Image (cartoon, rainbow, N blue to C red; front, top):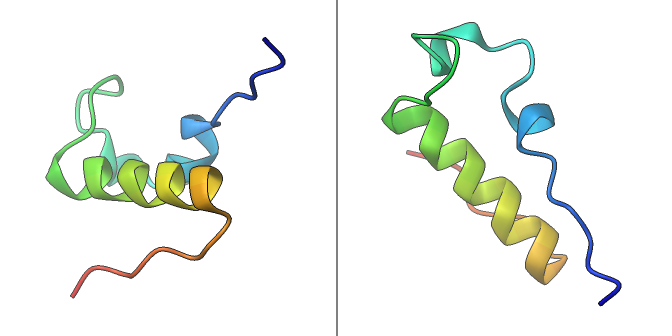
Length: 50
């Protein structure tokens, strides 16, 4: 189907505090993943957290 892959690892790389158990993101990590997905799907920069 010629689908791409969204690299969630890159969204959280070098930020171990976002993966407290080294597997599952915390709330802030989930937000970073959502922003990465938004940018990958729309091609537009996502808003940053306040």
